[in-house]
Length: 248
Image (tube, rainbow, N blue to C red; front, side, top):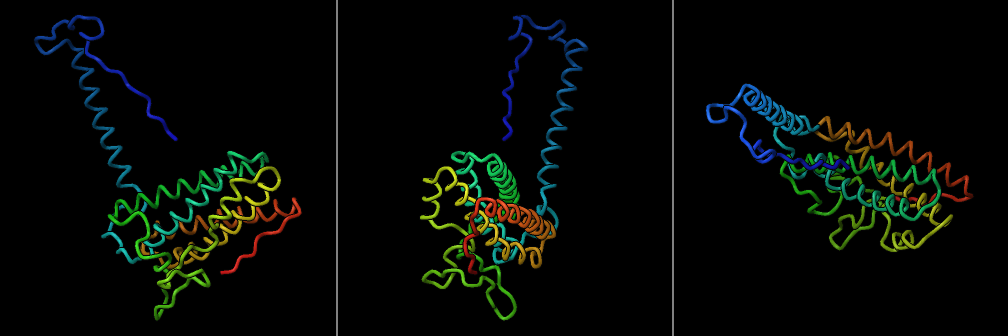
């Protein structure tokens, strides 16, 4: 996180109790020079802030995607999916002791928080809800209305109750309570399954999102999570453990 340092400013009178020579008649040359430099810096800062806003991937160009679009649905759902991953990674970083797994948890936490920032930024600029409003994964609709969410558990309305790979509240409670090797294995198992669960959503968005920036982010997720999944499979084998079953 970037902390903004505090700034202290004051007039010449506040600093040494006296006004600069010539203050009553427009000020000495050095006063005018400082004022000019300050004005230029202010303009540069305003320009930079505007550039950051305009330059946010997916922010500019055509009209905002519709609330039912792949772009919006992916950003909403994947934000929720990522937040659970950052929660699990934080739990390991607090309670875990294995340096290699701690580094993996740090990488996942950092990368997915950054991606959440992009997705929430897009939703803000598009003036769309930051969270899903009509259940999960309804944006994954192919020809003839076929839903691409496999055998995900359904709620009373037939919509997905949870997204693929996500841990249950009971599993999260186990993760919070675990320590030592038990924590190492459980974290790797839950995070591996979580990564596997995001593959279908990221693949669909990479192929069907309307904005190239959204497609690129989804493809980037696939690349990172495929690499991290392979690493976690290897770590589990080193510890004599197997991945959790994934049924989707």
